[in-house]
Length: 315
Image 1 (tube, rainbow, N blue to C red):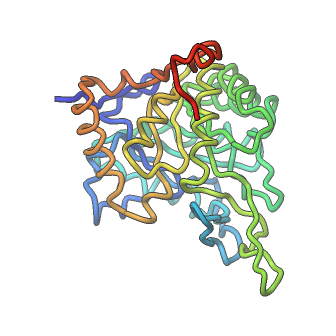
Image 2 (cartoon, rainbow, N blue to C red):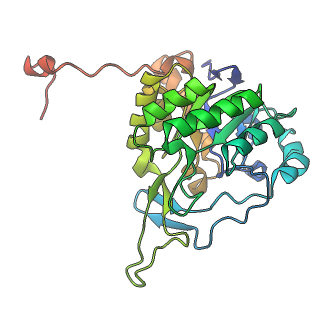
Image 3 (cartoon, one colour):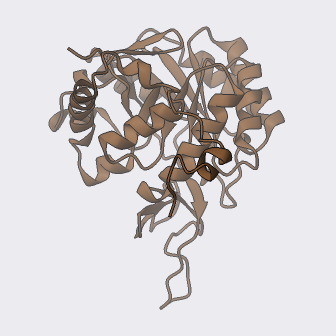
């Protein structure tokens, strides 16, 4: 029997497969058993009602999709009174994703969602479509440090910082978040992109730019996970373009302790369960008893002289 359990800091998960914030709700219980997931991750919660960005909000591209949803939310009060009781019906721990307009309100939000039933807080400092130009706190090391530090002072809950692939040096941002007190990092959010309608000459997205997700971005994010894993000591949750069991394994080999699934759930609402089952089968076939053994197990690149000696063929 393969042991699929993993730990993300102090948070114990029965397996490493989680939904990504914004791509999941308790309504998935109509098609899958939510109790089988490693954890539940709420849609990002803001203090006040937020309508989100103007339509159209989603457009398909080769290798994925581009979206600009804009973090719509019914607000903190609705989450605490209506949504949280629904999530508490299920066994997996709940990770509450939060957003705010200022560093101070991020800290206030972290404090206000630190209630029974919330097991960890994911601070979404990285949404590329929160502002029309793609601005977010995770673009900058100093801003990331400040927001994580204030949130750390405001709560004793495990704190995950969701980073941005649009940062110039994501490893430096990862180090800043760790220094600020993050217990784990989610790497990462979507990549800011643009798709233009060649008939109208307008963007396919009402907000102009959008966040690119899907299998096309996976090699980029896997590389970022590996870079961050070399820069920090805290756990990493990998997220971006996961479609197969091998994708999950690849993220873990690169340094991730767990993964978040987004795009796949749009294509196949039962996909997360298939990944959990498939991961157990893959490990059993490879003789791996504990899936946690995969984290960071990527082998070093062969040295150049190995190729030159003819020990490994290249074409």
